[in-house]
Length: 119
Image (cartoon, rainbow, N blue to C red; front, top):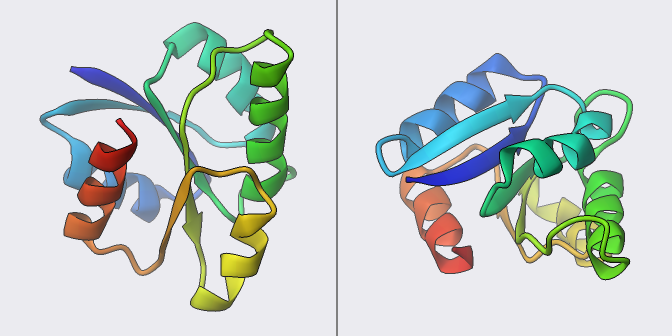
């Protein structure tokens, strides 16, 4: 089974992602973007999924941080999937260094397809 790290403070979103990816992936969760870098080191995920709106450090800033840390050799280079609130947020996603994104409300099939493509 592969490890997936999800950063979200929304319980319903965790439930949706776990339901879509569970069975073939172990979904680990942090509730704040500021916790993601440390969790990447601990969990060693093959994929990081970031909610656009999370606590004090959103998905765009978190994606930029972990990608910069990977380029500096302080974290492994792990693909990032960003969960957008609306299609208009795609512009933000292009500035985030994220490898892919999916717009909410989540479609389980689209989420699985995007996750598997990155893995």
